[in-house]
Image 1 (cartoon, helix red, strand yellow):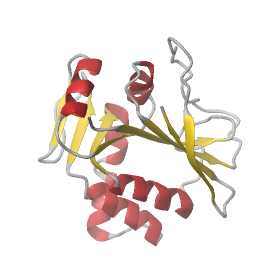
Image 2 (tube, rainbow, N blue to C red):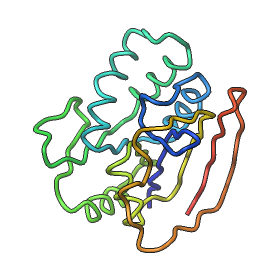
Image 3 (cartoon, rainbow, N blue to C red):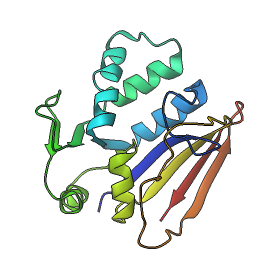
Image 4 (tube, rainbow, N blue to C red):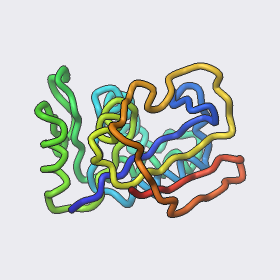
Length: 185
């Protein structure tokens, strides 16, 4: 069965609002490598609309301010398949992009049983639901050395049926002071 892998950036105080943190080179290099380890992206509507067409456009002309950002754009654009979970989105871009509208648990279990590599997910709403449903197999969390003080917090509106016990597989401290944590269920 394919693995569903979740990645997110958080500030020390748990803020996951992308406007509050810093997307430095360490973060982009780390997540570009995670992107290269997947062949399918799974997003909710909001995250999809933040990512597309922004990253594919950047990959076309390498307009990022750093090599790390351009590398991330290339890794994003090279993904074989994208799946968007939405009840409101009418259409999506890309020939290998589809929309899931049905029962989230059933649809993701079907996706995990298909042939292919890892499935990468990010954002907040859909991943929170996937975590609550017990469908996420691995977690890549980058904790930034920033206190946001305000903004959306990860898993704020999620009630887990029981505590989720994770095993730390790897950690890495970047020069920036950010820490990447890799956990498995």
